[in-house]
Amino acid sequence: MGTKFSAEDACAYEALDRLLFRQWDPIGVSDMEGSADDEYRAYLPEFWRLVRSGSTETQIAEYLSEIERDRIEFETSDEHRLDIARKAIALVATWRLAVRP
Image (tube, rainbow, N blue to C red; front, side):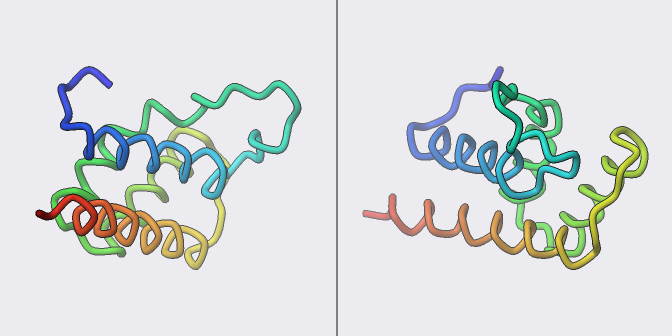
């Protein structure tokens, strides 16, 4: 991760990592036997920053679109990226609620 996180943030960060790998997965590597679960980890710090800072689902989806277009060169759909953005926002919100005293 490179940055020190609270235990709660570390759990949310890891959950976002799993979301990118298992559900966003534009090249379908999560279905391949022996696939590396760190395939999209290079995109995670910025994804985390966007989700954690309160970016809109459209802004988050645009980040995913840029990755797909400029780095992976394989695009999913606008609907899929928005769905992932919504799930990421909900996931982090759930973690925030879970750790409130």
